[in-house]
Image 1: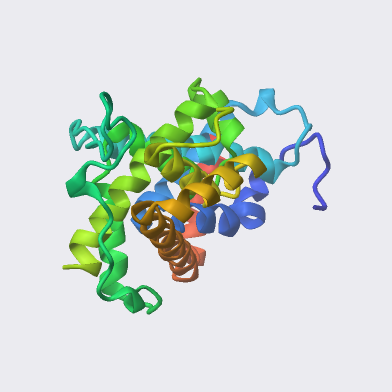
Image 2: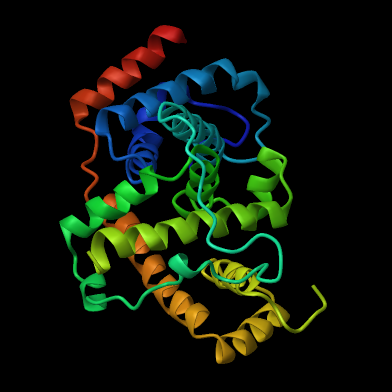
Amino acid sequence: MASTKHNLQPEKWVDLHGDYLFHYTHSRISDREMAKDLVQETFFSALQAASNFQGKSNERTWLTAILKRKIIDYYRKINSKKGKAEVYMSFYEEGDKKGKWIEECVPQNWRNEADSTIENDELRKIIDLCIDYLPDRYAIIFKMRTLQNIQTDEICKELEISTSNLWVIIHRARMQLRQCLEENWFNK
Amino acid sequence: MSKFMISCDEATTISDKNQYVEATFWERIRLGFHLMMCKSCRVYDEQNVIVTKIIDQKIKDNSSEVKDLTSNEKSVIQDNIDTKL
């Protein structure tokens, strides 16, 4: 707040923004060491890009924007390690039944729905697993929109996709997540 | 998308959009109408709310469990910056 608008103060970065940036990262990436590294890398990248800083936003906003990119790159990296599974379809894609549920994909009633409210380590592990299990392309966009809470138009601009394309991808990701939770938690 | 009757695929897409409060007024009308007639999508829509809650809880838990950087870790990071200044 007190920092002047057009000047960066790298010698105070950790004091001023370290906690904020680390918190931002670690709440989105569970690996603590990795989160710390990303914060460090963010500062390095910021130094390199310092001449581009125009003072249009404040220092923290600017650093956070750089950090966001780092997190996306990290998501990309871990996802590409897993190979490219395709998401399965839950609806008929053509013919008379186009757009209708494929019978074995119809959502089943959940037997222990009440268990969703508890603060349960087990459930958290399962949701992490289910998110991890999403194929590449779906995972990146789902995480950007849902975990990072980046706005839709920003993601579309960034990844050069249309809004309807984004929703198709999020739709398929959430279909798979729901089914994954059903199979591994609710109706296990 | 001017039609009023939508498929299950479209209905559940709107349900997903709705989780981010981005479904338009007319989309919500069409969804509501579809849900009146379609039990499978009704189940999906109800479970979708639960999925959203679980994810929100996960994000909250993650952020409340964050232990701040130690002063030691901080000074290492700042030192690394300083060497590049």
